[in-house]
Image 1: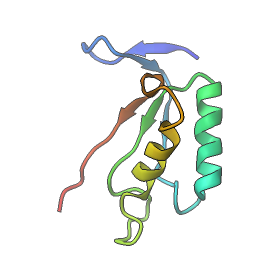
Image 2 (image 1 turned 90 degrees about the horizontal axis):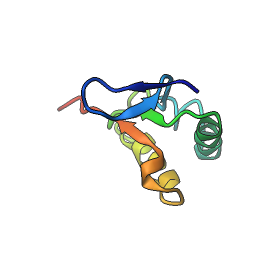
Image 3 (image 1 turned 135 degrees about the vertical axis):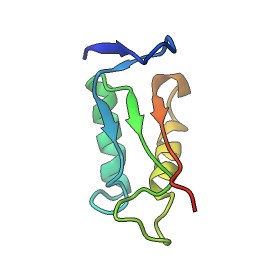
Image 4 (image 1 turned 45 degrees about the horizontal axis):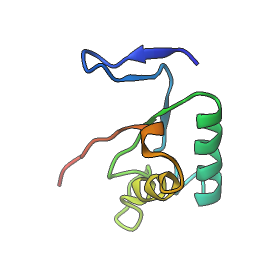
Length: 90
């Protein structure tokens, strides 16, 4: 996997960012963990998430994706993944 420097930050990430917005709707927890595992195995270390994921947003599922990414990260070295996130606001 090719790597790219992220702006002027000095942080180096995979040139592909793995999106997580369907975790919790189109992908259940087990499938989401499998996708993240395969991403790491493929050299993808840059994950995108948000507090409103999964999409389409519902009040019941809001934040579920970030929760699952956090649970998945608990058993891995934190420095193995660069997380990009955002807040949509209220």
